[in-house]
Length: 436
Image 1 (tube, rainbow, N blue to C red):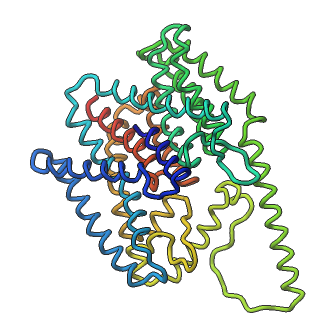
Image 2 (spheres, one colour; image 1 turned 120 degrees about the horizontal axis):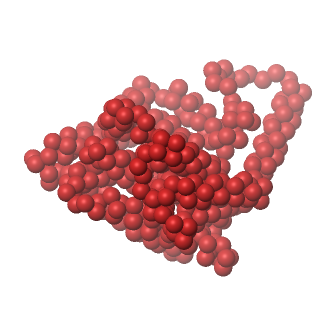
Image 3 (cartoon, rainbow, N blue to C red; image 1 turned 60 degrees about the horizontal axis):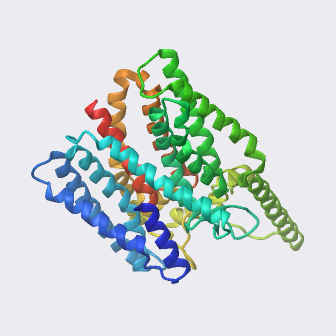
């Protein structure tokens, strides 16, 4: 349902000009039902009990957070604050619920197959929409200025790129385990469509996700062939297909949107630096001026290119946090920080979580993720070579891509349409290593 919800959301925003989108309503209902399902099994499951206690603690924290910011923020908009907190909370609620659901239905033999099949169906819908929208010239654009990119009939390019980056390793593994003959090349269509979509979005995240996934996939296949380990499918044919896709990626690199966009961004940064230099020369000509001492240095061109200028917003948030009262340092500054005119997120999720929820909120927020990471790593280290097999290598790369994108481009923890996929993969990997 996820891609359909996102298309309907785009329709609500673009055609109906309303923020009360289908996606917001459906996902809020789903999150509430997920939390309710855990609460209903409070007595019958120790995991559900611990998860429910955690969610209650998180709810108490959110109330304290809203109270502090109502009294402390120069501009406090309750609906915007609540909307942001709901989006942020979505990841942990569905993560805990998915982990419980995999355990609850673990008796079903087809559970893993359903997981892979449904992810593949979602990716096919996204890929076909991207292809059709670009061919019919009905696609929305990723950027409104010099840069080039397409988002199909989806509204947010960053979120679409993050979704496909998390999905792509799953699609590649699905193709690998089911390919036994050359005629099974049709199983690679979802991989090709998802890769095409990632490249056409025009972001560094999309291009990097394709290259990293294919490289890890090929390396894991080669490792499995060398070790002569048992794996479903014909690994030699899969290795040939994966290598061919890597070669195609190398060949098309000079003509994909991200190549042009990188030069456009460099030119933009050069223009900004020139304007700043001219302003500084003018100020020096006018005479010395008093200036406040700032401990942090302003971002340079390399970091601005890497983070697409998000580091400039990070720099501003550091100033907000330095000047914030102690209670905001503890429970966070809420949506947009202590802004004076218009709220703007950094779009680097770890920083957004820290500055918006403070020291206590950040620790609470990442507790479930740390629990699952510790549990999985503890089991995998018993037989570390399994990590290099195609299944584990690609599942782990899916998670690492999601967590990495959260830092560099954001729109993972703060975007329910993205975080549901990351939560699903983490929960599945945790369930799989626990049962095997």
